[in-house]
Image (cartoon, rainbow, N blue to C red; front, side, top):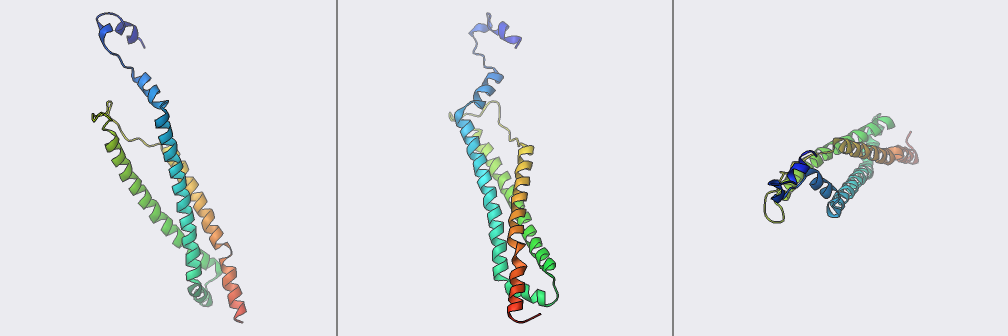
Length: 175
């Protein structure tokens, strides 16, 4: 920087000078901060996987618990495609509500964390002040990955669902 040589001469040489670039480089290379970010990333990935597994288990439970209702709908003329669409719509509603709840909870927790972290270890206010920033590309990539895994889980759960209903129908002698 052009100011560094001037600050090294008198009368400024008695001042303690801290470079924002040097402070930023120090914070980015801090192993504790890097570890905390890695831990948060792993936690987010595990949470997304648990959400997809939860959606899958919910759908499998619906298929098991409501097989009689699905059979009734089929007996009334619903095609396997109609039944699959019904289950996919249910899964979509559950996923959308879960996503909205997750985003709301994440926003609240993020705001709380920033307000707690602004007080430094010495009980002083952080300088410069902290601001919450989001990496929208990473968030979008995470949401896209969650949507893909959830979609695959739902398709896997409903893939053979109607074969069971049809087998039951044929085993009862109904055509």
